[in-house]
Amino acid sequence: MRNSILSLVFLLCCGVPVQALSLKDVNYTSADSAQVVQWLEEARDQYVKADRMLFFARKFLGLPYVANTLDRNKNEEKLVVNLRELDCTTFVENVAALSLTAGRGSTSFYDFCEALERLRYTNGMLSGYASRNHYFSEWIQSNQDMGLLKDVFDESTVGKGSALTPLSVQVNYMSRHADRYPFLKAHPEAVKTIVGKEQAISGRKVWFLPKGKIKGNTRDIQLVQEGDVVAFVTKRAGLDIAHVGILCRERGEWHFMHASSLRKKVVLEPLSLVEYLQKQTMQTGIRVVRVH
Image (tube, helix red, strand yellow):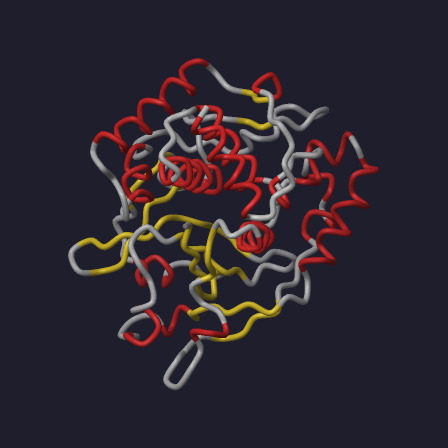
């Protein structure tokens, strides 16, 4: 009861529309729910505080990379909980949902599902396929508006000596390539809603750190902390973010954990952040956000 009351207070304080989530509308296995509770109890028993994101991220190391786990049902959008197969976004979402739940002192699977719904859907509410934060810039904005995270690189951090660069978000990839998305192919009427969301995102001014300005940059990199989410900006037409992960320090350098399509699993990237970006010709730099 106490955890349920805390959850309600948290939602109201964040200005999130309160709509009761039913586990009947969640796609999960008993193994998933048991794993969530086990990890949350471990975090509680080990008094994990500031490093919650790292604690939970490490739990996923070695698990297989599998794309499109949220899109297996072409006719109905459900909250999918899948801790066994991950892509880069679901990896970050699951870690963030676990961290938020643990931060509220809860070990409840239901509370985890509520946190996951808030993160994954615009304004924290599942109302069909189009309500999902399909573009990561939308994911950032929606969750920042609800007070769930902070954009580390914003106007308040730009100043003398900063290499942070303004970027106007421009997205239309989904609507222009609707045939590549099973749900949109089966439900072409939903494309209009996607176009509306793309137009709402496009034109927003955000700040990013160009990849050529990371090495030796103490002014901007000092803003970053372990456990922050790193989003890799792309120059591919119609897209905003190409990949995401969770930052960490290894041997004095910035690395990140991510669900890697190249390595076919969740890994601590052996290349440093700078080395990784040097090999990515379509990626232009990084955005960094911090889950509260």
